Length: 101
Image (cartoon, rainbow, N blue to C red):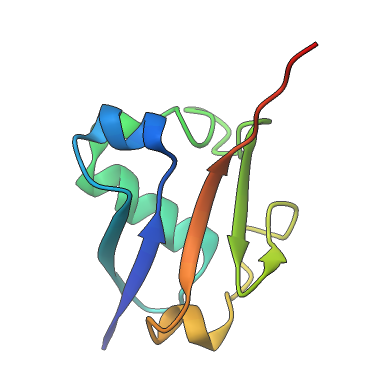
C-alpha cells in the first residue's frame, strides 16, 4: 500500500524542478523524511544535492523540514512522520532558511 504525501517546496527549488510549490508523491512503506526525499530526488533528479548532500545524504544547513506545526529538521531521517502526513491531510514542508548579515 502506498501513501499519497503532499510536499511543499520553496520557490527556488520549484524553479529548478520545473514544478509548482505543492506536489503529491507516492511513498511505499513507512513515511519518513528519507522516503520522501528519496522519492523527490527520484522524480526530480535535478534536486539531488540541493536538499541534502550528495554523498552523506545529510540535510543541507539552510534547509528545514516541518509538518503538523513541528520542526523535524533534527530528527532521524528514518523516524516515522506523523500519521496525518502519511494520510495526506497535512503537508510536509521543505523550507529554505534565509541568512544575512
